[in-house]
Length: 384
Image 1 (cartoon, rainbow, N blue to C red):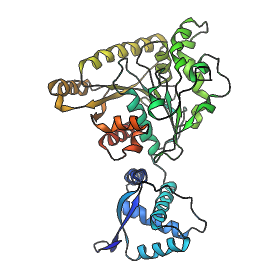
Image 2 (cartoon, rainbow, N blue to C red; image 1 turned 90 degrees about the vertical axis):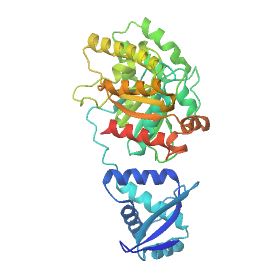
Image 3 (cartoon, one colour; image 1 turned 135 degrees about the horizontal axis):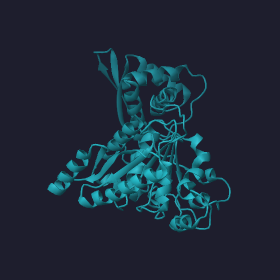
Image 4 (cartoon, rainbow, N blue to C red; image 1 turned 60 degrees about the horizontal axis):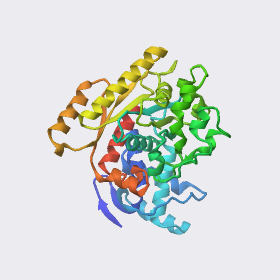
C-alpha cells in the first residue's frame, strides 16, 4: 500500500509490525537523533545488499506502522521480498532489526567498577516496588543495556507476576549463596526474559521463600561484616556480565535490607549516583512515614560503615489527581524535597494490574501506555 508523498520525494508505506519492535525503533531513533523514516530507509538498503538470509523476526500481533521510503524503493523492496520468498511485513521487520543491531544505544557506557546497582526499597508494602523495579529494568533492557532483575523479597511477587516459578525451598537460591550454603553457581539460576524488545538482554533471578530465614541467620552469623557484605559476595561473579543489577527489596528494614543498601553504595572510583537507592512511594502520608524510617536506616549505615549511599530519587506510583487534596498536596510535598528528586509520576491506570494478571512484563503487554512511557523516562534519568 503506497500513497504519494511529494515534499521529500517519498511515498508512504504501511505495514504491520509488533509493538515491541516499533517501540524499540522509536527509542533508538530518538537516542541517535535520527528520523524514523531515515532509519527504516537505511535498514532497507542494508537488507537488500545482504547475501545471506536474515533470521526470522516474530511479527505476531502486528499493528499498523506507517513510514516513508524514497519513491521507487518500496516497489524494488517488495520484489526483493518476493524473490526471497518472504512476506513484505517480515522483510521490513528484518530490515528494522538489522538497523537496530548495527546502531547500538549510545547510552551504553563502558563499566569501570562492575555493574551499576539499583536498589528499590521502602519499608511500606504496596507502594509498587515490584512494578517499578520490573518496569525500569525492562526499559533499561529495551534501551540496549544488559540487566539482571533480582527478586529479593520472600513473598516472590516479582517472580510470580512475571509468570515464572519460584525456586523450591530446598533448591539453591540467592539466600543460600549469601549464607555460603548454595550448591553450584548462582548463574545457573538465572532465567532469560525473552518477551518484547529485550532481545536476550533481560534476566531474572527468581525468588525463594527461604529468604524469610535470611535475617535470622544473618543475625546469628559469626563472620565479621557478613551482615553487610553477603549480597555483594554472592553477586560479584555475575557483575561482569551485566550493565545493571536491579533489586526488588522486601518491605522491611532488617539485615537483608542492610545487605542491599550496602551493595548499592558508591564504590571507590565510581561516579556518585551511578548506583544507589530508588524509593517508590504513594501520594499519601503513610509513604512519608515509611521513607523517614528508610532514611534513618541509610544514615545509620553510612555513618557506621563510613560509606556513601546515593538516594537516586522518588518514584510516585499509582498517582490519581481525582483523589483530591490528599494526593495533590502529597505529590507537591515529594517534589518539594528536591534531593532526592522525583524521577517519575506513574498514573493510576489498569495496565500495571493487567500486566501482572497476564504474567507479562508491562513493556510487553502495553508498550505504548502512559505507565510504560514513565518507566522509560525513569530509566533515561537513571542512565543519563
